[in-house]
Image 1 (cartoon, protein in one colour):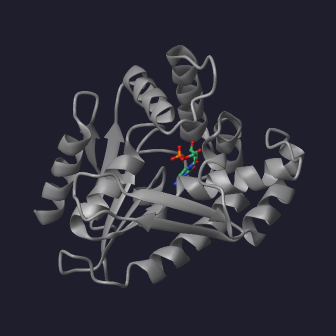
Image 2 (image 1 turned 90 degrees about the horizontal axis):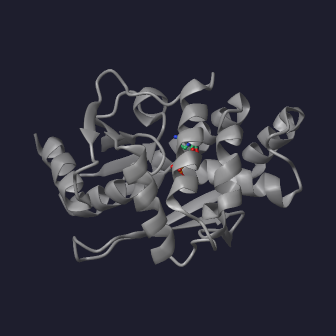
Image 3 (image 1 turned 90 degrees about the vertical axis):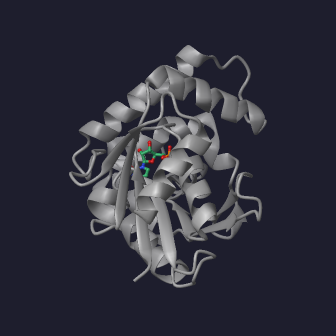
Length: 242
Ligand code: C5P
């Protein structure tokens, strides 16, 4: 089977950037599982459903089952440039829409609904099974997946599990820079607000009943507070080659 790399960690710990670059370096496929929960959240909000209202859980679960979610990652031939992932919800490109503050605010409540997780798990596994069958430029087929429960639930037998951590202030600063760069920073958004939102989301992710955020026992913990993206990527690629 393809080589599997599972990358988990709290919000804005650099998972997706790191995972994408690791995939690019090794010629592996990449799956962003957070995008699935964001799509379900967007689908619910677009239908006027309030995700914080517990009585809407079954409606949201139905949406999670019926929505078609697609990912397309474009890799670059230069190993240092950042690959881009486009996200499609029912064939519509929602790549920017799923990163807005409104979706980020509600996504953890949606991801805490058990049947939503089951629906997403099925979709993510199907995508993993079809997308990782091609051989990468490293001469072997592989898959990098990032999220909160990859090492614990989605790919429990992954060949390498990484748990990324970083100080919440550092994570907030990085997230703000990223939003500014992509032009999606909302007016007046400051580092304290972003930090609070990340901490609140982590708390929800850690304390929920359905597959909470936690480090798998056999995961390698990597603190990225003082690492550059290149440093993080190098460290993981070295682990793959070990
Ligand atoms: O990674 P990202 O910040 O896009 O994920 C958005 C949210 O989706 C997380 O805050 C978490 O609540 C949820 N999530 C999850 N399990 C995953 C990936 C994301 O619960 N595997």
